[in-house]
Image (cartoon, rainbow, N blue to C red; front, side):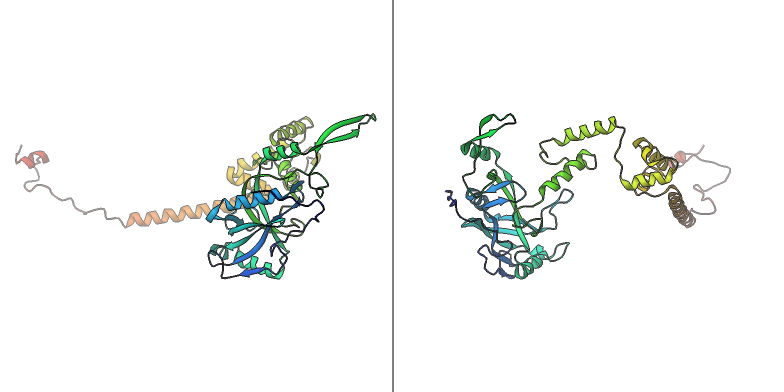
Length: 382
């Protein structure tokens, strides 16, 4: 598709969120759509401008790519979910429907959201009806956020094709000449890289105000990425963040943090666990609680209450005295259960038929004559 040039002096436009891209009243049809489960026509997927919080710029070529990737999905359509899946959850139960007829509308990519019938009966309720009501009552309260993979080769090539001479003075006052990327769009005042896509995976509905004011991207990715990065480095999670944060690999950061803590004789423990350990070992000042002392205290729980309950109760911050009571209760329940099983077994054993009281003779005749069974069968007598 041919790229349409954007006038340099054209004003940046705010994206129409959940409603119509042209700013008109939302076009909601509750009985329309591919599955007769509802449709919102003309919703905006993206617009030319800054991807807030991501330090990227979407130009007209980006909009064209959104349309191309959406069209390539054919009758399947572009997936739409209720918010993005998180680290500890997938999109199960969040599926809303599919976007069809995605098209260019000036500086926007717009399409029609067809709700699936199942979106009316999700574990969280009727999400489809909620979205349609929200569109009618407050169409700017939510927006679509695209999920895609970067085409880094194309982005690098674009930047190389738009380099400009750049001069600056160093700390000694010397003039340094260099080259750097200069965006051809004058509205891109910070010269953010222009987005190029290798794959478009979904367009999800997200909240509007602080998290996503323009309905396109999550506005606070840095805080989220920092939390994921530091949680992995500190060993709070085993799921390594995708890519790297602050240009540092997560594994290398984890190793560095471990060495730093060890060299300073420090350890990271949850506040609740530290408070519990301090309660159980009042003679040990809080400043002297180490990883080794916590492990020793945990082992005391395991030795007394078993691996499963010991670890769980220790992590829950229960005192040793409370655990003694819980353990006694569990043992009483176990004894009661075993006693009931024993009584049931005795009752069943008593009802079993054990046979006749008197033995049955297998060969007629005098008692003194004993004939082996094999000879009896052959008709022979000894």
